[in-house]
Length: 358
Ligand code: NAD
Ligand code: ZN
Image 1 (cartoon, protein in one colour):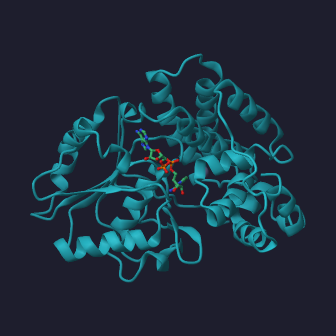
Image 2 (cartoon, protein in one colour; image 1 turned 180 degrees about the vertical axis):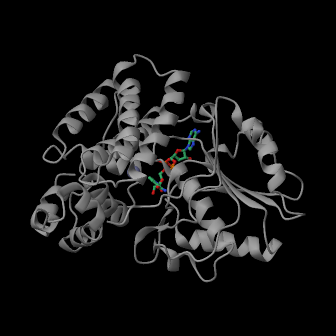
């Protein structure tokens, strides 16, 4: 048996207000005049007070990332090319935002030191050279992208991450104050990504004590904030931020499952975003995760959330086939969920009947 030798984030700072330490954290990483590059979620574009709190020096570079769509390989290439032509090299890349910005920042950091185009590195262990120094600072919690070994990108032919030992951040900054402004629905969709990570990891065939210890804690935190607390408060943000971290650690040493495999198809064809896509799918997965789906439905009601319906109405056979191809291509996810013989349990017809429910 080959055991996974897990590359993890090097440094973690946690606590309300810890974002103010960023300047000191970056100082020893500055190389001569090479700039630090801050990639910031466009949500903050008009928030002058927040922008002023970013420790940007005169020669640094700050750009806003439009995350209306999930990150594309072409965007990564364009940013990396511009930075190379402007500066030659940079001291580091700092992503400040949700999962979309964290993935974008990690991918740009990788493309600063690797030849060719980003889509050539979509897959497992294709990245050749260590990336430039990179920092991930989540402003919305749930995806676990802050502790991930991958950065998910939509390329010309597929949606797939650069999964490598060079992908995890050198540093993450976990400041629960940064996620306070996330709107309720978005908070729920991304928070449920974490809940679904826990269910898929804990109920999968790849489960082991390493993953279980993180997954159980993350699950308990999600239950506390989305089911047992009456009001969302600062403590809820603190718990959600740590649930995201622990949920991410749980799947890092196991795998996600049916909801993710199916939601990748929706995202590829329809551009459905990760969190909401997972919610749309998970809502109909009683046959795979009966207890988890029942609890999820309670959380939807308790938090008064709308889960969109009818998104697959009127799709053509060809479009269903595209989603089915993308989904069945995720074999580790299916194997984790249904076992080594998963192909005897999940075929195109059964998968189509699931997609028709959304
Ligand atoms: P997101 O990054 O797409 O952001 C969702 C919305 O929240 C955006 O409109 C954004 O502008 C807004 N936002 C961000 N911070 C905010 C704040 N503090 N206040 C108000 N609004 C704020 O959402 P997400 O769910 O965090 O990330 C989804 C992305 O993460 C997808 O691209 C998915 O592929 C990726 N992902 C990656 C991994 C991984 O392992 N690398 C895992 C899961 C998901
Ligand atoms: Zn996820």
